[in-house]
Amino acid sequence: MTDLELLAPARDIDTAIAAIDCGADAVYIGGPHHGARAAAANSISDIAALCSYAHRFRVKVYVTFNTLIYNNETADVPNTVRELYRAGVDALIIQDMGMLRMDLPPIALHASTQCDTRTVQQAMFLEKAGMSCIVLPRELSIQEIREISKCVSVRLEAFVHGALCVCFSGDCRASFVNGGRSANRGECAQICRLPYDLTDGNGNVLIADRHFLSLRDMNRLDRLAELADAGISSFKIEGRLKDKTYVMNTVAAYSAVLDALIALNPARYRRASRGTSKTGFTADVTRSFNRGFTDYFCSGEKPAPDSLASMRTPKWIGRPIGTVTAVRGKSITVNSAEEIHNADGLSFFDSSGRFTGFRVNKAEKRGNNTEIQTQAPVDICPGTELFRNFDKAFDDLLTTARPRRTISIEMVLSAHSDGIALEITDERGCRAKAAITCPQQKAQKPQRNVRKAQLSRLGDTIYTLEKLTDNLGEWFVPASVMADLRRKAIAALDHAASATYKYDYRRQEDRSASLPHSTTHLTFHANVANNAARRFYNDHGATQIDDALEVSGAPADKEVTVMTSRYCLRRELGACLREKGNARRLPSGLILRPHNPSIRPMRIECDCTRCLMNLVALPL
Image (tube, rainbow, N blue to C red):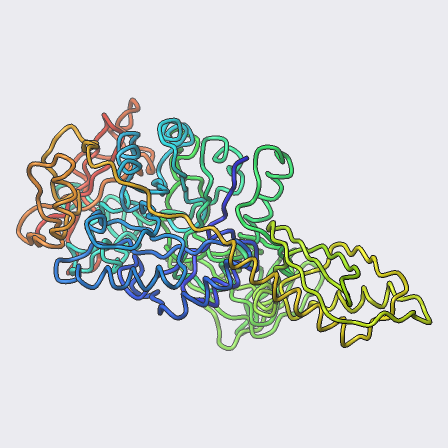
């Protein structure tokens, strides 16, 4: 039996609780510092409160500690980790191997996707290093995942939804080279979302003003069964900077698909947490922020041209809703089969190709058309396709929804000594019993329904009564006594659930394990930023270790490789050099030239042998 875990992002405790209530089996959240999203930090007290709530449903809480650590910060890290451990955190997601040479409590460690685990050898090394879970890169195919799964025994985690980085995670230095904001320090400036001109080596513009590196969002709703079969047990949604409604909608969608998968394979899979979620809405991921969808390299086949990137804009275009048929001042007529609401946000590409939009002030349906009134005239032409990237009705539904998660329980009510006893068992495997003194007195009327109504009053708890076995016959029990007995039994059940919660703990490191590389010289790509990390790699056979670029600095007067990607711009543009005739479609020596003069141009180097693309930052 494999426990399948839906892992949800949370920027704060409110979002985390909403994710749990919508069906998440685990949440990942930033701690006070050293999370890979500097803008999504949380206090220890908030994380402690989150753990208390989550663990009642057997939901895990993982804290992201997945940035590089500098030497002057290494003394503070163990103190913070100890506080997180005491707060009840289940595991840390880490990138910096220096943490394995610090005095930490025995908290479980997960290898972040920033560790760039693209090979079987790297996965085996991280398992031997003591990782309890390995977060795999987004670029891996199902077959590559399967090969890794065959060679390791620890859990494997894969991203299934959300934004995609164009570069291999942990190996992107575009942001650091252009302004000192390191993605490995949680400060990515999203250079990949900017517009560029594609030029030849002489500066001639081949394609102007496109977001060549802005990838679509991942969507693997239809791939969960294949991923589970390949060895994935944790399905991760990206988005620690996303708002609560996005997380609720996405979690609910994936939770429903996981439930359906388990229903088809009940002897093989089960959910990793417990409880039943009722969200109050029908999830639809197409109605939350996205840049268009792709399952990326999941199939292992070479992607078709124009299938991975969202070159026209890095923003959310929205779902197509119709075509403009007439424009008169502040009035726009739209031929649309969909209902357009007041306060909807509509978007379009204008005649120059610029992405823009407007807010609906008033909408009136008239046959197949909708008359839209705007606050100010909109520069839009008949024939323009309209999209909706803010659905007021759906947003209101999510905003006002009150999802609730409950644990089903069974009760047995019976006589006990000089009173009555209530025994409760639940779906978590917990059992509790409470007794109370109550003189035996024959009832004048039937009591079973009365007692069931009293015991079912669980609205202020997380429990819902699934079954009651009442062995008291026609014994009369005052309502106040029954309520007191119910409260005592529920309190005992809560205590039993807390006392029996099982934590994972840090696995032992095999210090004899050799580095997964053919060389013992580690370049800046190994991201060694502190002496503790240096000791770790020395212990495993490294003989020469270069500093991380964040430590040594990025030379402004020299070329620097800032990205390596399985995504290839030539292939996306239909000019893959591995296919005959495509070399003529675009010349060699391609350069991406940014519109911002402070950002360095990047030369495109195609590594056709390995089917990779390198981007080399040129001196300004």
